[in-house]
Amino acid sequence: MTDVRASQSASTETDAAAPFGISETGPDGTAAGATAGPPAAGAGAAGGGWLRWGWRQLTSMRTALILLFLLALGSVPGSILPQEGADPGGVQQYFAAHPALAPWLNHLGLFNVFAAPWFAAVYLLLFTSLVGCVVPRTFRLAGSARTPPPRAPRYLQRLPHSASYPSALPPDAAAGAAAAVLSGHRFRLRRPDAADPGSWVSAEKGYLREAGNLLFHLALLGVLVSIALGGLFGYKADKLLVEGQGFADTTAALDEFHPGRLVSGSDLAPFSITLNSFSASYQTSGEPAAFHAYITYTASPGASAHSYDLQVNHPLSVDSAKVYLIGHGYAPVFRVTTAQGQVVYDEATPFIPANTGTLLSDGVVKVSSATPSQLGFEGVFVPTAVSVGGTLESAFPAADNPAVSLIGYSCDLCMNSSVSQSVYQLDTTGMRQVTAAPHLLFPGQTWTLPGGEGTLTFVGYKQWVSLAITYDPGQVPALVCGILALGGLLLSFLVRRRRMFVRAVPAASGTGSVVTIGGLARTDASGGFKDEFASLSAELAAADAAAAASRQEREPNNQSETGA
Image (cartoon, rainbow, N blue to C red; front, side, top):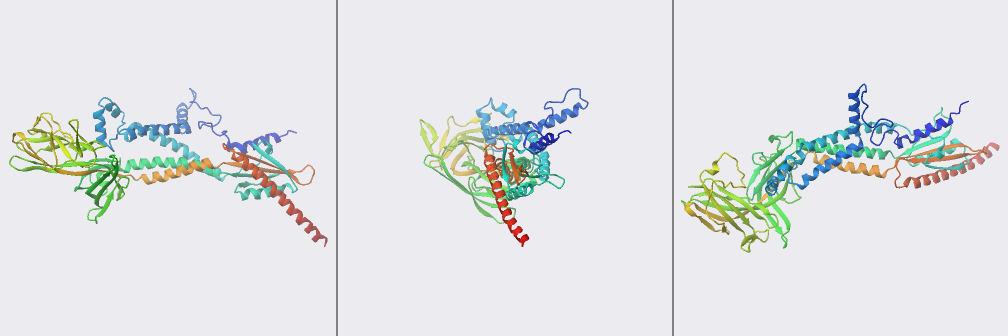
């Protein structure tokens, strides 16, 4: 007769350990025993084989990690270099400071990283890789959650952890006492059915580890979807606002508008904002202490007005959009009159800080309605003017001693050209310089221009703020998914998937039984399962002894009642 016990035992032990090993898939995600490389040439379905191989490579964990690393690496230039959507002025300054390097960086899309084709390609490949990895695992996890633990192996001594103890109970009772203890520890149990001989218990615990791993991948997929949601339906805009001015959230009133792929001007929130005043305080070292932009806003046309103190990191939330205070500066007020006394220019002109530490600012004044010639001025605004070696510099960012230094130009119709010009730059090509040297003015002083060109008065100054308006419908989902990803990662690290097996056989003496316990864990880098197994083994032995003592107490009572 052929002995089949060894083969049955090997099969049972393989079934017990298969979900914990790497027998199902290789390290690169391919099936065990399958060829990890591309299909052999000359195969009947070569095209399909190549596609399957490519899909396996794309959806492997190794590829997903590489793509995630590339996505993080590609985001680095977006945080180091100025971006067109967030800081267009900074991009212009970078071009001016690095005329040779900037065009190459721009050709690579590094000034608009998150809208670059190569960034979108990495993003889409990572999204596809995660979908191909997570969706099949979801079905496998759902199937394993409904699958009972495997049968107990015949030879438990072959498992990584094993122990045995004698029992005064029959095999079925000893297995039942062990099942009660394991059930109290929330193990999922499996007992032999009527057609299965033997007395054994299979117990499994730690399904949350796989659920946490799956939750992490699903949440990471949700983060990518949230980012795509913001890119499709969100928008960003910038607005420079001088004290006393206001604007409505329309494309015509905004300085910069960067809509999402599916956003148009009609999708903007219909709010309006007026800057009443702005105040800034500084430490003695010149470091900023606090900024306060006191604004009045209405959520929609005709709605009631509300006041708000807009501060850094304290944005205004209105109609699902957020308004951030991202910068400030000075706007000198100039009045230009003709030789006949007609006022042709009287307004605050924003100057852009050239030195963020002292707020020394550059700016231009364009007077296209001046007569007999159009006028233009290039100048520097100095908040706290001091002379250092004959050079005018600013000693402090606050306007303690404000002054402007201007160079005047005149021309005939040079500002009426069809070529668009920046309001912060003056094209002096073809213009005549009014004076050979810059002219210094303090508040209230007037400069009489030579040649009967009129006068320019430095009236004073106002302050301006730079506002960033953003609407991102994927921001909250991304936050939720990030928290879920962290929770899933913690579950996958803290929870161990482990199995316990108990098999009871009749003792050789013919009285009682011998109970053997075996256990294994999928991952046990910290060695915690060894202590857990020892503790459970001692508890099983103690519960068995208690059940045997209780059985012995009942048996004399039953015998005495029978004798009576």
